[in-house]
Length: 507
Image (cartoon, rainbow, N blue to C red; front, side, top):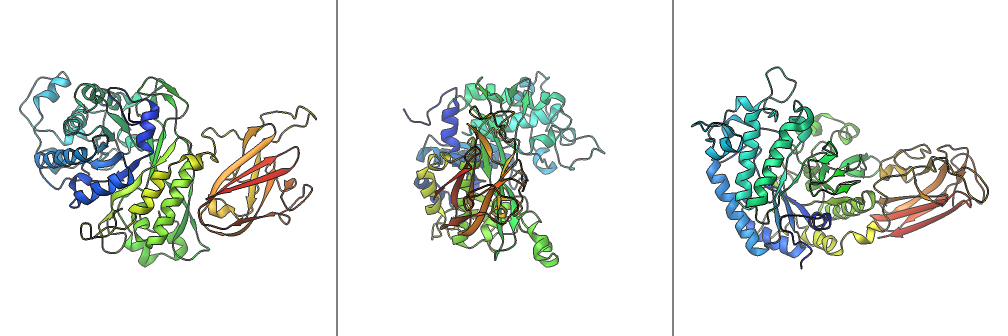
């Protein structure tokens, strides 16, 4: 039986199979290069196409939209019936998209309301006037909004979509005390999917680290864009990724308690490159303005091809070692807003060809990583639940108390999102692995010669390095960290009682 088989239920192992072969395939259902897109999907082994359908602001009538998304789903599933397609229901509504749509009788009936002959009421979907929200943000505590979300969800399920991205869920649930409204809608869509979905199951994510009510997660997995830290001492627009929070736990929709639900990272889009920033801000100011004056995918798209390939490799490895519950959604197709390369309005992973003249030529780099998988780097990874200290634990032989805070510091720190030579950093704080030992893994995105040492108790008065036989104070006796290749995974283990430091490198 295939690793991707499910029907009515999706155990975590099956969900992780799909997330480990995931891509952000924004609006692939509308793609003018769909045949070539499918070729890339089959070549790379992608099984989960996120954001494949949905609207932010519609560009065609409702029925035309659903005819198109169903035709695309049918074509993709004819090529590989195992693929999960994801639809989006976002945190923005527009009058011209909502008001022309008649409310079907089955929507009234699902909500236990008398059937009327009317269209959806846009104004009844919004937060009350004067509320400090976007003018177009839906309020899920309103029944009309719940009806709209349910209506669109059902239409996508009927079109062959088995997953939903619910956008910035913490925004439109601002008045939804106890998440009763969104909980009701997701429960109704799960029930509908149980009967009508392709494999009798639908799954949900949103931009959230956790959405748990009474111990139960409303989402099947959590999803967020990456968080970055700019690098100013290298030419070009360089940045590194930093860990922000963790995936929350709870009882999953499968009824299983999870300490941490699966997590999906992506390159997000929210408007393209900021022309004003490029014309009016200094190099340093722009470094801190989002992703060098743009959104994530437009920054990525405007980098040279070799740099894009390196950053794909880096993102994949970074995810593998920094979040054992995390996966990376490769950018198969994503809107660039003002354009990531000065010309294209859509990033496509496809190799540039007559079949896809706007391709960014990264399918081979992605295929290599997807076929190799995560396990090679997970073996060196940091745990999900970082245990930072000995917690009043003593060495059983000597009775010496183990330190609660141990920090790896040195010239390498800026390249993992910290400040150089910060012996008190939380970013490079080592986690406790038992027996008086501490460890930390990270990805060094740039080859070069760096230095490092271990600060016990987070102070420069008691440091250890590979270059010094005895503990020392200050910053002058650090050991060497020689990185021969970009995107090298580094794991450092420190034994407090022996002062032994071991370094493992993996590419």
